[in-house]
Length: 362
Image (cartoon, rainbow, N blue to C red):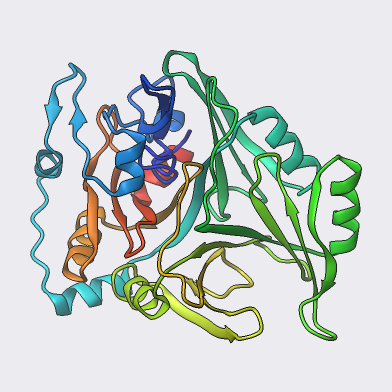
């Protein structure tokens, strides 16, 4: 779970945020404390964070190695960081910060089955996989390239939990492929489910199709030429698109790459990201006419984003009206620094220190 802060222990960029079982049988993503390898243990906060806290935006408490509660503010103090940003220099900091979407974290009911589908049907490669029996979960990272440059997915399996509620808020993942029809035939041959047969977006437009993975997560296949980043997007639904656009621009420093109203489909979408769509994974925010809130379920977790300074990032997010649910600081037992926050709709994002992230990949 390298840097599994993204994993819902602040999840994937919080790769160290792994899931563990609760007394009621629900899985929880928590950062690790287990450290068989610094690289793999990166995001394992030994934190008593319940799944409901992670998904409902409740500020968690952390535990030290002896199991004693550490207030989140104390963790930040341990880093001895003196932050003094105002609204103006916070905006400047956000603009110059080197940010990149690192990975997305979500739960699956059968890790081997899902990996088989992603590798054989979608063409992804397994970057690493490991089992943590003492914490009751297994996890794997897959991508189309190395994590130093490519977006990844972090799949987490909690022992004994074979099914999750995806909810109505999560939309789909987008993958660029050179031949949509060929990939759809492969998905069918492997027993996968095709939700939407190949067809043009518009008359004469590029081909698209929609397939479903073993856990019910949808993947939109977009016909494109060769690209350094085949993983194109994560689509989430929001209740107020203009509010969300403003938040992601001001608090997270993303660019509005494009916006489109689709009256025939009764929705409006906004593409947000840290670089051009053809070279970077982006976030697609979708507003469905008249729908102000969604059920997030318990399957999808969070997105991880790299930053040069988690302390300044957290302070800037607060100044821009964002809610921090995990104060910035190093994960217990390791030096990787992270912070976690939620957007106006409650979608979680974890920011991970760039330098620490690269060290963990060495």
